[in-house]
Length: 118
Length: 116
Image (cartoon, each protein chain N blue to C red):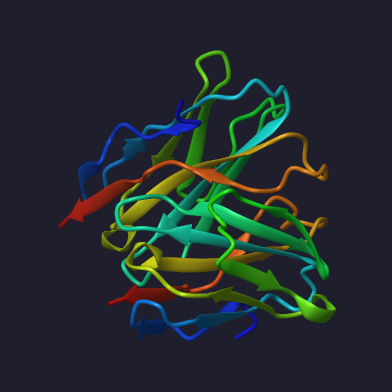
């Protein structure tokens, strides 16, 4: 079974509008971390936001927020006020096990290609 | 620039040849990771170092693959007897287990390998 599922191969959004990129995950661990990375056409993975499984509040970083619904095992990324430079691939990833433990590797989804239209 | 660097950025080789990639992590980071990304997929974990110790290798890392991190600084990933299926982007990342970047892996620009 897929550990990280991103069901939207591609998404389109108008500049200045908000967009939600979906991510569901599968783990039996009680402690885990969820990440979103952006990958522009240049190829480099850029960290956007992190949510720990025990964090009570949804994470926010500037225009990025993570809509964390633990019972549904979903961790959707919300980008507000989209900009042309937001056009890129977006990957959801998970680290299973507690922070600082021996678990460290990230498991990535297949990604969503976001296109921001002017 | 104090980010993660990788060399070369692109490598074209013929099937059967050996290739070696280098990764220089952020200087104070003691953890270093290698991932492989094929077209249309997310990165897949290959191996992980904490300082100079290689602590885990994925099943994806066949016997033709070897990674080292001498002295806990830069790392090399070698692929022997390359196959066309090895064509991919090889990504290196590093992290430090404390501070604000505790949960973040910083990625390099990747090395794109094409095996003809």
